[in-house]
Image 1: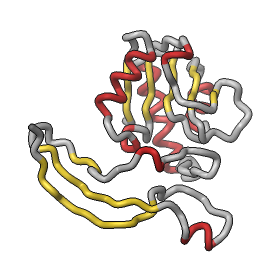
Image 2: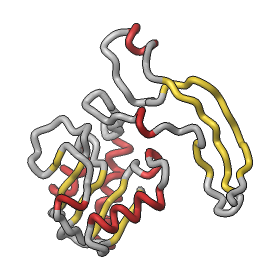
Image 3: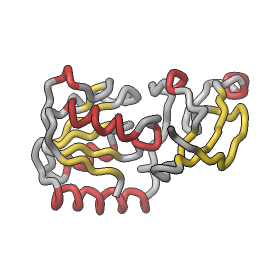
Image 4: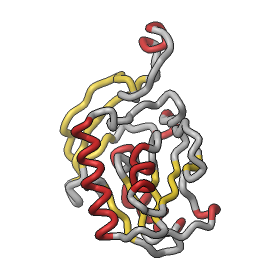
Amino acid sequence: MKQFRDLYSIDQLPIFQNRMYDTEAEAIACPKGDVRLVEDLQTGLVYNASFRPEFMVYDEHYQNEQAVSPLFQEHLIYVAQIIKRSIGSDGIVEVGCGKGYFLELLLQKGIDVTGFDPAYEGINTRIERHYFEPSLGIKANGLILRNVLEHIQEPVDFLMSLKYANGGSGLIRKHF
């Protein structure tokens, strides 16, 4: 039997901090959800017990690109070096690649990478506008998860699904 400790709760917050709306009225009427942060006393994990994954739709209106910042661009260059050194340059998949900035940087650094994100808006054929899943038949040497796990209700289950989608092999790297 799981035991939890309530940490914080608030009702009816916008479910996306990075969603763009065409009008003020659309923004005011945005989808809202409750936050009930709890700590699982067995694992120490803290999560939103009121999270409703069916509300989360990542499409072209979801804007979370941070690469407009020169300081963040420097950080991404550093992360690309870590990936090349620790995972290698071949057969990399970026799960949740967003608008593709980091994937483009990896390509410039000579890293063979494919990206997956339903919110992608560009024309790079290395990025597919859907989630990474087993039916794709892709087996990567490494999976990159930048800014992804914080969007997942059951992170351990999600990581296991990535393992299954990748044929049970490969390395997984979260944000560095």
